[in-house]
Amino acid sequence: MSANKIHTILANLPLFKEMGPEELEHIAQGTREIHVSRGEILFQRGDQPHGFYLVVHGQVKLAFSSPQGVEKVVNLVGAGKTFGEAVLFMNNPYPVYSQALMDSLLLHISKSVVFEGIDHHPGFCRKMLAGLSSRLHGLIADVEAYSLLSCSQRVIGYLLQHDADANDSSKELTVNLPASKTVIASRLNISPETFSRVLHDLTAAGLISVKGKDVQIHDIEKLARYGQQ
Image (cartoon, rainbow, N blue to C red):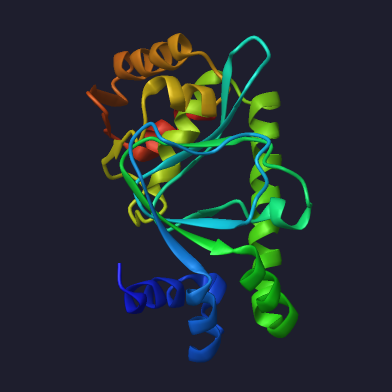
């Protein structure tokens, strides 16, 4: 990837949009391109962070394993999303490991240019804080879902989150599952068997159809109402 391409990608990130050309150029100089193959570990739990990551294309999971070897998926990070910012400010090692779920291209933005951006650009600092606050709200939503929502409601909520760009709440929608059912089930804090059972029940109710990794929602509004029962 050329330096100009990296510069363009960074310039289009909300985090960097208030920065001028010279500041962006400085950040680009502290950014490196990383190619990871499917199944490759990007970093292990306990490694020290030296920056944060942007997924250009592909997908990465963040997870940890219990002493019994059971994996818990914390997040699935797709194209255009970043991860690893929070630990930069804690001076602690990564609490999770990161693994590519498909061949992926990432950018690594170094810790030094992040801290320089915070020191010299209030807009950058505000956006960084906003991003971290958004992650915190996401974690709270996860805890709420795991504590208060049924397994069916979690799966329905996961499917309906892909409706963010839809204007007509009654139209059909096809959701391509971005990872295996086992990985998604772990993300929702349910077993793979439960995830499959919920999909089967929704299919039997005529709300969805499943073909491979494609889940067709026949009526978004009806599925949302079903999830409120």
